[in-house]
Image (cartoon, rainbow, N blue to C red):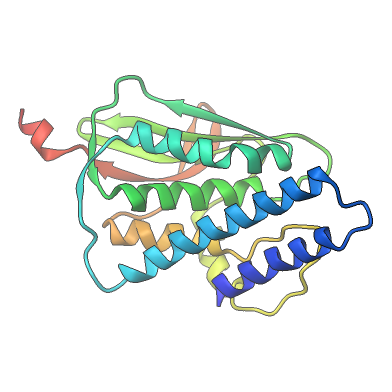
Length: 217
């Protein structure tokens, strides 16, 4: 249901843009952007459903590389919403023991949900973070001085995602899909999304262990 609502919203936007009397190259770019974002959300959500009842295959993964890759995938979406997207990565992070696709899906879901929060009067800053917070433990997540998100928001998205709503053709309104897939994938990793404060700014994230092979070495 949340995936269908999310796709419906984006298809309505594409329809509105394509039927506009002022259709131009910028309109084409917007359609491409919406289509790419929608497909990525669908891929990550289907991936999360596949592993609801089975175990994720785990391997050694660079959390820093994951955060960088997600940020690059979201650059254009952030610019379209006048959002300043930054990275905050602890230098020389050791690899973690996790699933790369799951890590990307969680960060993509959290960050994109923050990006598409409507802010009428000010520019928004969103930070994708990967930090070593304790020996053999790293935290991945997102924080912002401008947009609030909490684990409660994620719980509420499960309810809101299933409710009927009117989609404004020229606005992206969140179905809660990004929050839901992030929640499901963190559980699949044996973790959970938690509130944190970093550099005086609030955010949400999850914890993953460093690779046990590297810890042994």
